[in-house]
Image (tube, rainbow, N blue to C red; front, side):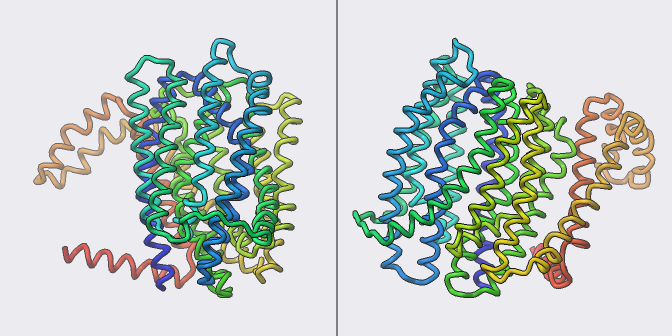
Length: 548
């Protein structure tokens, strides 16, 4: 129970972080798009994507650092914990040097000779590229400290630093609007300054609070081999992930130019903000999955995997369905300038993320075992197929959205592959996973869409006029209330003006989606004991509220 309380507490802290980040991201993204313009915004996304392509080196080691730190904490071996930290810092320094060399040679050549960028913006693109490299290297060097905070489950610190980061980015946006220097160059410079501050904050906090993070040069050949062998197979999986993400982004630039990159970038920004609900939940849960494996507590580990996969989908679906239903209105209100393809991109990316979020706890469980050779070879192999298949289809004249249809198909195959690989490693029952996770998810996804669809296509001009006529009659029986009287007089006028039919549609469809998902999850997604638990929690909440 204490472990579950830690997960719950950390999840709440991370949700606070996510909500603030979401609000700032939605606001700043619109301002940045309008300030930079569609072309410069697309340039920033695709040039930054070239740098991110080198992140496969860092991501592989990041997963290894997170896993081994959590594992040693789970075993209570603090001497080995210090060695793992120091060795991970050494390896990240080496990786940073490799990234700088590759970025300043192959990456620079690719930027200046292959990407489709207007000639007059090529200088600005190079500025963006150099400062993106700086930001990336600083982020990379902060990985061991970031991993230490997460492994020790100090999510309050992680949340606090994230709040500082989004506040700084908000200041960057205000500066971008206010000053007249080349705005694309200025944006790249200021975002790099934010990276410097965040890196220093993580480093200082860790050095003061975690003895293992006081770096001392240490080199042990056997530990180096262990870490690099683990990271090596992670490397293959991360190359596949980069090919699926930034590789496809570059393909779209080569076939369609920076405007399509803008549309894709906006879709992934929305997806990043929405998927924060799941990422935070899984981030709070992942250390416990690894620690329970280290402590040989398989029963609790299986419980975390099943509940984590199912609840991850429900959390994301609860937020994603209203956005999916009314993506066009939301994007138009948010951005004002909506690049072509953005609406469909947004919907398809959400579907893809809903499928992938089911696999999150399975990925962590595979990492916990340390036996990832087969896992990465098979799953990474499937993900690698996305890039060549997308290229062939784009070459045949398919629209840019085809890349996401390919990604969705491969994500489904990869989910099934993960289950079959983990079955012998963890004695994980595929039948039980299907019965307790996949079937409830499918039922909730299918049933909960019906009511919002009915509402969506019922909200039209006739419906508004109907409300304008009959709403006062409905309220007539409560005329003694001042609020009701006010609504009776002014609500028909508001509706008659028809100033916000889209707002009414967004509101009614959103409410219908939330109600439908909530009821479907409770009736179809939860087991009996989970329903009882939810009832008891709701009763306690209502009782405490009445006492106040």
